[in-house]
Amino acid sequence: MVTRKTVGIIGAGLAGAACARALSVAGFSPALFESAAHHAAGASGNAIGILHQLYSKDHNLASQWVERGIETTQRWISELTQFASRPLAGCCGVLQLDAQASELIHWDPNGGWVRPPEFVQACLTHAQAIGAEINFGVRVESIHDDPAQSMVALTLQNQDGKIATRHFDAVIVCAAHDASRLLPHAMLNLNSIRGTISSYRLPQDQSLPCVICAAGYASPSVDGEMVVGASYERLADGEIAVSEPDDELTNLDRLRIISADLAAYCEKLAPENRTSLRCATLDRMPHAGRVLDPQARLGASISQMHQMPRSSRIWALTGLGSRGLSSAPLGAEIIAAGLCGGLAPVSKRLLQAVDPVRFALRRHQRRKIS
Ligand SMILES: Cc1cc2nc3c(=O)[nH]c(=O)nc-3n(C[C@H](O)[C@H](O)[C@H](O)COP(=O)(O)OP(=O)(O)OC[C@H]3O[C@@H](n4cnc5c(N)ncnc54)[C@H](O)[C@@H]3O)c2cc1C
Image (cartoon, rainbow, N blue to C red; front, side, top):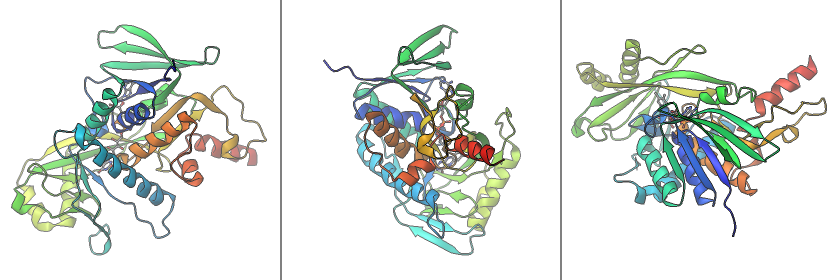
């Protein structure tokens, strides 16, 4: 009998749910642990998110990553339809304007809006249907790599305070900012950016025909609600993401740039605001791959990414920033391919751009020069 490799996944947001699905499909036996009582409790819980390209004049690596990511996410949306009770997304097109909304940057007929919590739920439902174990109300307290046993131990705490330990062949950390606490020596360089989206009740006859992006974005009316976003406030270490009254006002300012008439209409309404934290890296690219091996010494001969020492069993998919919808499925497919020993679904350059050891390598190179 062939035993399926066991993989522990930490977090049930877009990243964790995508990994649970990709790994189940690839034939692994994943067990996911989420500290909250339900899925999409963090940044992935916004009612509506936008799936849109990232334009750059030279079509740089960040734009290429988002492009490949959107292709993957759109494929997943069509595959996951059968696991959802209502449409996961609306392909209404995205009108990308400059920050002042005075110039057209691009019209993307294939872009649109997505319901992130439903997308997460559909990934988990599919994963569970093919054998994944999903646990809510279980916080991962610590990760211990045990090379002697070729296993990783997770220390888990449930909501009654009960502690347990589980062992896995590999672990994927999809815990957004908590990755820095769980992997203190991995040099992931994560920071927290508070964001608020504002939802306004809007009749269909007032709805925008497509998503419009300028300094912010506004969605068409979905289920009678238009979503406007998103405030962007970098937090100091340890600061907590409370909603500020200013967030709603800055969202209204973003809407005013897109449509003064709609903003005047919405000014009289009381929107529903949702505040959460984006987890971003210093270079705004996500982490998708094996993390640095904290035990290994970085010798003077190391100068390239492939020479960096990596943990053989601990992976991360985090730092998705403002583009979780396009990064999560692609990141999950990269990790699934890596765990299978197969070919990555992106070019070597893109793989290196999201490699979790890149900041450690840059620091090592700076130290060698100084
Ligand atoms: C205001 C705002 C607007 C946005 N708009 C868009 C948009 O339009 N388009 C787009 O693509 N993206 C958007 N994003 C970004 C997107 O929401 C994020 O990139 C994405 O949700 C991140 O997913 P994640 O799974 O990495 O993190 P999260 O969704 O935060 O999930 C992490 C999960 O891990 C759990 N966890 C943490 N620590 C532990 C632990 N120790 N044990 C167990 N569980 C743990 C948490 O409870 C949480 O559920 C927006 C973000 C914000 C804040």
